[in-house]
Amino acid sequence: MAAKRFKKVLVANRGEIAVRVIQGLREMGIASVAVHSDVDRTALHVLMADEAVAIGPAPAGESYLVGERIVAAALDTGAEAIHPGYGFLSENADFADAVEQAGLVFIGPTARSMRLMGDKLSARRHMIAAGVPVVPGTEDAVTDPDEAVAVAGRIGYPVLLKASAGGGGKGMRVVRSAGEMAAALRQTRGEAGASFADDAVFVEKYIEDPKHIEVQVVGDGRGEVVHLFERECSVQRRHQKVIEESPSPSLTPDLRARICAAAVQTARAVDYRGAGTVEFILAPDGSFHFLEMNTRLQVEHPVTELVTGTDLVRAQVLVAQGDGLPWRQDELAQRGWAMEFRLYAEDPSRGFVPSIGRIESLTVPLGPGVRLDTGVYEGFDVPIHYDPLLAKLIVWAEDRDRCIARARRALGEFVLHGPVHNLPFHRWALDQPAFRDGSYTTHFVADSFDQHAWLPELDEDARTALIAAAALYEAGRRSGHESPPGSRGGGASNWRLSALRSMTGNG
Ligand code: MV4
Image 1 (spheres, helix red, strand yellow):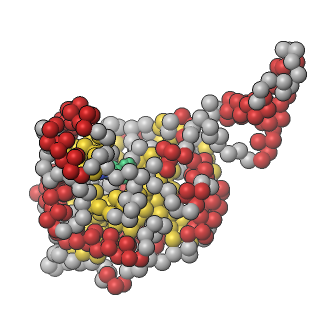
Image 2 (cartoon, protein in one colour):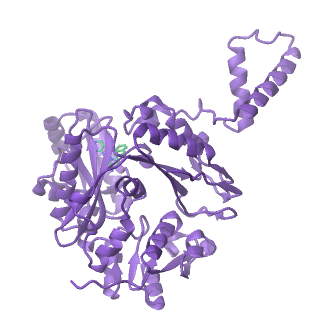
Image 3 (tube, helix red, strand yellow):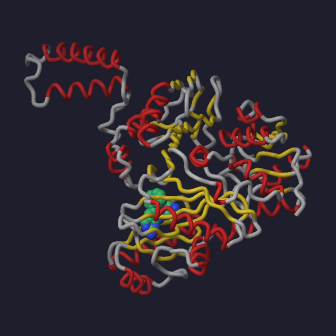
């Protein structure tokens, strides 16, 4: 295939990923077209792109998810290709078809790969046929509770009921005994039918306390596939990843080689084109199983870029142009260690509810080994309509200990005023023993993070002032009650806690 160099590409996304793609295009000498909703008129991706097209009102369903408007914007501006980023239309096979039917190039996999991997049962069947290890379970949808009980009897409890059309942790239910099966199956099918218009549910062995390991792959669509090693993504909260790192602290060289080979086998089995990620679950006994394949560039791709010294957006563009892969497998290696900290506008002390508002001040750490992929700037009003991800801090160092030290330094220098955010959560996570020694699993946040016992850290002066103020307040209150300070049980630590909580708004 003769390579056709793109001159202009439309970026069908917003926020930090749209900025990242625009930067990659610019480095390749390719002009960029941004699209934006009404509230995003002054968003960073719009300011950075060479051109911008308004595509509708704030709700994503009326703008970023309207495929026809995006295709029309590309045709109107003379763009030759569309980069979908992640989320929105990135894994929508009908959109990929519409892009190609308009004579444009979709920078991503074929619609066929997206359909095949978008359905979990179909992905499972393909992987079984390709010889990739999958979690023990059924190859077909299960509707009869007696059949589900028979399967569970064979593979052993607990089992997991999974909706074939589910994703991101939706449509899953753990079943621990035969007595729970009928009701659980009915509920999971009902929810799947209502949420995904597809009530197909299958049974899998439930792996307790797993690690989430994923492998970055890039294919040329003609059978050639390379992997760029793994990312460990077990620091997550309700299926939303918060910290990712590469390499995984849990893989031996042998296990790494086997997981990466299974990922390549997965991608080859579908003649994969472009960048994709194969997700595995790693059980405490060291066995690993295919879970699903994400047919897009992922949020956490920068940790792979830093550890392998590559540019995945450039690779996506080259493959889409028909240039083939930019590297051979033997040119790729992991060097050093990288971690990504997702900066969300959400409040860790209030169940991580999203927060909005103007970015009042922003001091970015930078310095050696620090990268910031951001979608915001000082003065920008964070809209309520989209994902609360503001930016990603990615840190690289020669080994894991130095990476943690550098991350602590960078997170300590980072100042953001405006929306409530999770920087204090990251500083907390870095100090947890299970994180520091790399033993953390997908249950880490749920098991270790207690929002009610958690005090966001204060600097020393603020802490001293608060404790002094609380002591004075308490002494005054107690003298009014005729009881000397400290005469009631647990006094000192209790008042200190409650005073700190009320004064930091961390009740
Ligand atoms: C599992 C599992 C345990 N056993 N499957 C969650 C989202 C989807 N990608 C698959 N997920 C899981 N599937 C079996 N058979 C545990 C999870 C899971 C999980 C997986 C990856 C990352 C974080 C997770 C958090 C909770 C549960």
